[in-house]
Length: 383
Image (cartoon, rainbow, N blue to C red; front, top):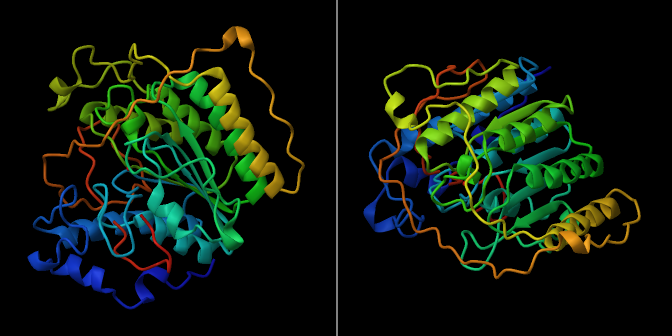
């Protein structure tokens, strides 16, 4: 395949990119580099590592050097074209999607299972029918970033191509996957993608301090396994994740799933083993939290989303099926939760596209901040 010209590198540098090169205190607020995205030494090197790793993975797919690539330091889905946001300085996802659109000359399906709505990527392609964005996320009053309602479906040519699956707190693996599988299949059927980009932020895990969902590593690998079953090229990225040891477990499990390699039951001996107590197991467990998603609320979300996708695919939407009354739960008020915590460690630049096999041993990882420093999209792009 003839290598495509790089969309990310042939565009003129934007003022925001220049700011990342040479941060100026007087301009920090203008470019969103305050509050949760402070400037730090080697910010430019860090931004290049994030984008470079994701682009390297995308190009391996384009050049048919791999069918699946992993880059867990990528997945910075909150960044805007000219502003950092939500620990995200550069939106590597959008840059890679533009590269894949040209390289594959066909539509791209973006799937986001980070606990937070993938607002930056959705906004970048909100009026496009060449990219479908599918985001399953915690949603409710006060929960960051505040977007991702079920009726946010796109505009202009992009109507129907933004697919949002809002969830209440506490959903676990089984109910999550029961929703994920049919919705993902319907999105694939409606779009007919040539390639898939998947943001697997680990903050939907049960012990994540910001997440409020109740997934385990089995939930993540189940979602990834389902997408891999389509036999399409897939770029797997990271994202959020604020419980270091569990995030490492999650990415080790996803890597093993992609490679078809078994994981040991116990975390192997290594210098950071003490972080994996008290059980020192490779797989995470669910917590005893209440699931505020009722049978009725999940059925309504499922049928609304599937109905929209059927219409997009030229099929008539089926009427919603009432949930069994015996299984119905009492409606619970949605609990507001603000994303107040910030990572304390300064991010460090890491070279990155894991197109080759990552280490089998998990290592502790703090989600690095990330925003869309490239103007790859003319519209706004917000882990």
